[in-house]
Length: 116
Image (spheres, rainbow, N blue to C red):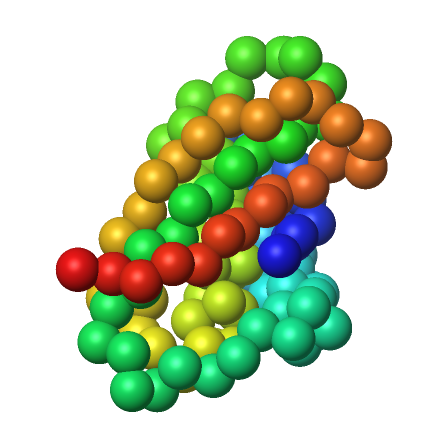
């Protein structure tokens, strides 16, 4: 399934001195967008599964260097949306993070597989 590229306000190094509200609003909106995309992609509920393995491929908007750990932090709400869609707590996710080729529009591709 494809999730939208996270807004810049969700980057862990983004600055909004003294005001947390823009980041909170961006996080809420991003999670709602991701839940809608999960439903549109037909992501099934898997309440009987004990764990899942997610392969996350980041396809950024350009060739600028980006840290995988920062990109992972920026999509926290997106992974929460996947967790909500499948009905499994995200503490039971195993993750593989990959860099994809830049594309327009930028996206985050999430592949769901069986966990351990």
